Length: 499
Image (cartoon, rainbow, N blue to C red; front, side):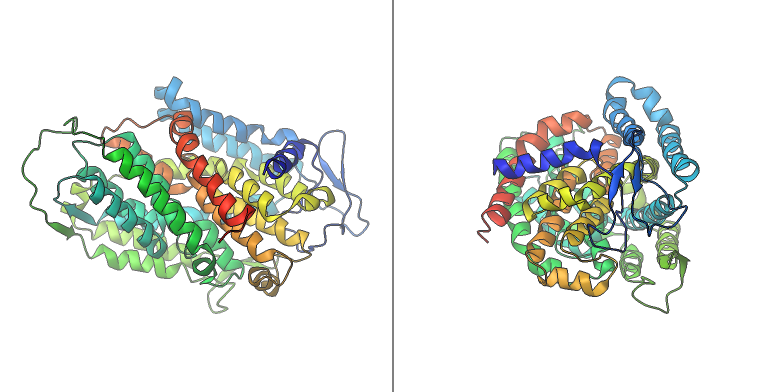
């Protein structure tokens, strides 16, 4: 156990000396290109077959804007709240522009920014569609808040997250969850909601969470996640719900959110049911990938088709779902665009600035030294720890690429991806399982690990719930509650492989 953790930490610490990057290379052989570090910290290739004009890798110092953004996300609401809430869009965009400009004009690398743009476009279109469509559906739960009812609602969210995505489930249920507990709501209610519904719940289908969706687009069979992730999923969900139930039993009403003490009718109702149609359109559009269906148009770039029809449909569904929504449902949900606006700007900064960090980590993992360290254990911790602080979708792709390359396979070959998922390569099935589980589970580590986390936090704060700061979230909830669970999951399913 200690050796595995130390192995990853050593690997991570060597990022500064990492050489080269080929996070998205089509040649899978780890020794096909000899990677050497220059005195400036940048990366060059000594392979004579490298075409003239091919871009160099990023310098280690180029991760500074990303680190600055993370620190400002963490400290802004705590120490300079007024400045941060007024200027976070400018800060995020400015830092992203710095890194993108470095790629375009210094590294002469158009590949990275173009991929980052399309990944962001796909990411924000899906989140916007699910957010707006779900916002027009009002679930009315007129019951007395109780630990058992709360557990049932969280369990329901963990199930439907695999049908309408963690974003859709989060936006559909967070407001009724808050209303149900209006006289006893605490920060831990929202945090456990993020743990269960916004992250771990969506582990069973490619629709559930963005990283699994990207794996599906690369060729991983649709039902692979259900077959392989089911036991870690139900194990983690049950443990979290038990802990939540024990905490919630001691919670007493304080009426800080109103003096409504009327006897609940016990009824459950819905308003805005027409928005389920638009929600269905968004979910159905997920499958319109031009690389899967040739008849779906796409934008060609470097031999790859990038989707845009799917995203246009999602954004169109968002527009129609808002325009034709039940106004009483919108008002009842206190719907506003601020949560998705905050996510949109924050993740412009994250997608723009995290390119060097991802490439340096991916390059090291695919180097001869890094390949020796790649096992399902190090993939679990590597994917997981970075998924907590980078967006988990590109982190998943980067470690999947590295894991396959270490086995002599290419992520750009559908047959290789299918073979990797089926266990054709030594330990490849459990490696993919480790990457998949870690990307989804560790996305709950911080507010920025997964898109819905920030939106849930923003909605909770809009109704007056005092949420912990970035570091408060980690220190008060992730470390004492989530980290032990992640260690237990690792021991049971990966280290000892008991199930």
